Structure formats: C-alpha cells, structure tokens
Image (tube, rainbow, N blue to C red; front, side, top):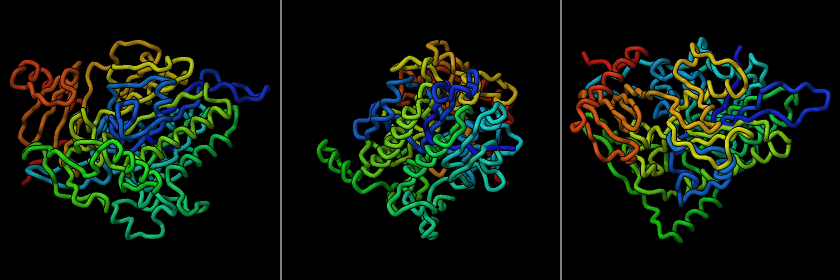
Length: 504
C-alpha cells in the first residue's frame, strides 16, 4: 500500500523532539522530514543565490540556519523525470522516464526515444520506505507521474492533496481552473483537484497548499514522526501572481532602471536543438521557446517567487510555534532549471537543456543540531541523493539495491568536504519543447561532457573555471573527451538507457 507525497522545491528534514506528552514514547532517531520542491525555479532566482531583483527573505533565512549548496543538480532538465528520481533514488534513464509526462512526441532527424508514461507501482518510493518505518506520509501539491492508478496514494502516501497527472495548474487563483476548462486547456494545465471546497475568491494556490500542509502538521499524532512532501506548482506557467506584488516589482524595476522588456539569446544549432516556434500561455505570446533570457526583470514572476517564499516562512513559523522546529529536517530545491521567463545567468541556458542553467538547482538543507548554520557546500550532489540521505537521517538502513544511483550526502551535512559521487550522469533522448535536441551528459570532477546524439558531436567544459560554459575545450582535450565518452557509453549500457530511433 502506498501513500501520498508532495514535492515543492524545498526539502525539510530534522530530528523529532519537543512536542510530546510526558507519557508519549519518543521515536528514537526519527526526525520529521519536509521536502519542499519548487517547480521551474532557477539556480539564480533567490536572493541568497545572487538575485538582486527577486526577493526571498524566508529562504535566505533558511539558508542562514542551515547549509546552502552551490553545485546541486536535478537529474533531468524536465519535471517528471526529476520527480521520479526524487521518489526512487534512481536515474531517469534507469526508470525510462526521460521527458515530462506525456512527452510532446516531436521528432527531428531521429524519432524520440520511447518512454514510460507513469512511475510504475513496482518502484519503491521514499514514501513507502518511511511509511513502513512508522512515519505518517503526506503529499501536498504537484505529482505529475502518471494517470490513475499511479497517484501518490498508490505510491506510499497516506494522504494526497492536490496531486494528479497534470504538470501545471489551470489557474493559480481559486477555483483553480474548475470554472473555465477552456482556459485550462489553453495554459496546458488542468484544474487542480480537491481544493474547490473551502476556497474563496482571490485565494492563491501556494497559500492554500501551505495551509493544507500546516493543518496536517497540527492534526498529527504527536508521537508519530511525519514526512511531508510539498511540491509547489509555483513558479511554473501560467505566469500569474497577486496584483499588489506585481505592482511592487514593476515599481522596483523602475527604481533600478531595469527595462521590463524581455531580451533573449538564441540557444542551439541545427543538430543541437533550435527554437521550436512555440508559445507558452497568454503571458508568453511572442516569446519563443529555445531562448535564454538576458536578465531577471519580469514583475509577475518575481511576485510568484515572493508568494512562494512567504509560504515557506509561514511553514517554518508553524514548526517553531508547535515546538518541533529542532526535530525537523527541511530540504528545499527545484525540479529543474528556470524556464525562459527568468534568467539563470551566469549559468548557460534554461529548462529543457543539459547546460548548467537547465539542471543546476538552488538547494538548502536545515538539519538542526547537525548542519552548521550559515554553512556553504561546494560538493556536487544530485536529487537522486535525497532518498538515501533521508534514510540515514532517520536512522534507517540504506537500500542500495533500490536507490541504486543515489548516495547519502549526510556526511556533507555534518561538515565533511569529500566528494560523494565519482561521476554524475544525465540523459535526454528527445526533442524538447524548450528547443534542445537528444543528448546525454557526464560530469567528472570539474569536467562536463555533453554528447549530442543526432550528429554524434560533443562539447567539453570545465564548469568550475567556466561556469557559463562559454568555451568548448573538446578539440583541445581529445584524451579527456575519449575517457568521458567511454564512461558515458558504459553508463548508458549499464542503465539500458532508452535511445532515439532512426526513421525508417
């Protein structure tokens, strides 16, 4: 039996301690765990990651109370594969979920790889492992890992609130698309399930999800630890926000002398992906997918980030009010890079690409009594590592046969600085709706190789010295290219990675 899990760009994990009655037994070494997952939030979108236009005081505070990672990665530049990896600790290539569900099906010189359109029930999720260890397991937010019967409640969650097959909400305001199905279709989203009753005019989805999560925490059994998976729909399209906050950022842009007009750099070449001439929703008319935004200057997107940040603050305040903040491990991250409504600079490109802008993520962990407040970690980690790290933090045995690709980064949270991975891999065998062509990638040490499958070409970057991936060193480093290509090929063979197919 499986329970419900919600992921919104933040992961909270911490030891369970204070709020127990005198006669209630306290579970040994079992902290509460909160994973907050933002949707499409870019690496540079938060103040604590360098943004001067967006404001995120509550996430900045969380970073000041815990550890901020500078080289944390999603396992995919798209949402469904990334979420599947978080749930299982396994690479998307191994799971055969390598694009968002359902994939757009575009083809170029090759046919896109075949893939699964759901997370199979046979996969063992983090929610199942924690449920079997006595945890209450709650999913609140976006799921996007298949149609019925592949829902959170079938994947280890006791409770599922607002999670279904959809990758986007029809609207961020109540009744969340239920009043206008045509509008929902235009935004490539669907009405958010289960939140119509009890809602009110102008209620924002992020506010509502957080209030539902807080209710679960307030009504919990005090002696039972909980796992809250809070995957926000924010800041995915449709780009819409509270009117007063939009005006706040319009005024801020004027004060800073920042033009509101969007400017873009074209990404890709004929064999490496190009603009597909597609639009995303009413807010993006005329903005072509496959473009990298030059600067952060969208007031609506900035307002969405502030609302999400406010709700992280509300959740953290409630933990303090209930006396369980020191018993809770919290992790916050995003599912993939920021889309073209934001700028991921100095990283290259955006969501949908295997350049750093598509896969490097904000990543903050607060583990009271373990992580040093205000610490920064430069060791590369990946979202496949969340599951084994949570198991270790909860005093549970590792399950390497299950979380085959994830490695616990708990030593880093305790202050160690040794690498936890020998290599990191990515695989995107599709023609993406953000312009990229089929490709795979490997990072070893400071070096990252991208293999473009259509024309069998490669790019090589030193992503430490060249964070923006401006200088391709493949021609200058033939031996390194040969070694990394061999490692990438061996990994694809070991995972039986799904590959694009030649046209007949």
